[in-house]
Image (cartoon, rainbow, N blue to C red; front, side):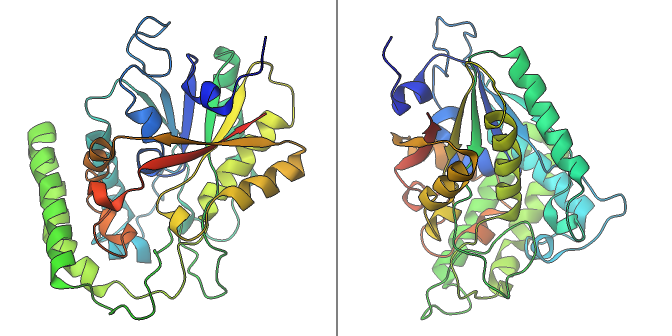
Length: 329
């Protein structure tokens, strides 16, 4: 039997586990899987709904609420307020999809002082290996670690600010602000319909604070840096799956938005696989940008911080028309 091409692996009927470091990464970067109408198994496959499994890793809350720069820029008073809103945004983003979502409840690196505990890596690897054991012939999707090299003065937050051209003003133009506020308000209307009073309160707050958040955002002088949480998740799971035999299981990497705008993922993926003694084939998949933009818009607190120009990622014109993947041979 001839070996499958990268495209055939990505579109074949098999169980899929998409691993999302944060509460938006898979929606931002893997619409080819989140939005595929018939799903990875097809209408007559083992799962007629086409559902995939999505594991979000960093969904935990610090034991004592704390304030960090990224959350403050998003308009939140502390980590409790931020996680409450972001979990609701994730519910809205996946509304209407059949996907099974799982949360590991580890902390975002912005809440982790110093190095991560080895226990975090062990817990992540064990969860994935247990899932793989129950799903033979599966496809596991990991972040590629796209983005620019981290500059010496970069913040240690789990998020990276997008690049702004040197000639750009520190404050966005009124047109951009208006569009970002409108995006947040659309999220508020959706939340009101789907989540009732709590949804209106949380998403409405995002709308009221969007303009203030955008106007005070500092102007960085570098492109989006490779995210530390993405690299940690990628390395942990890839080492676990490729470092020991898992017959029938395929591993692929998805290129992250917006980090790809700072540096494509090819070099990062190649360097990792060279260390692991493996190779991969690259593939571009076309997507429905309108559908993806509608899902991205649900993350109303995050969109303003992930956009450095017009249009924002919550509009079709702000998104690439294809997504890049690498499938390990």
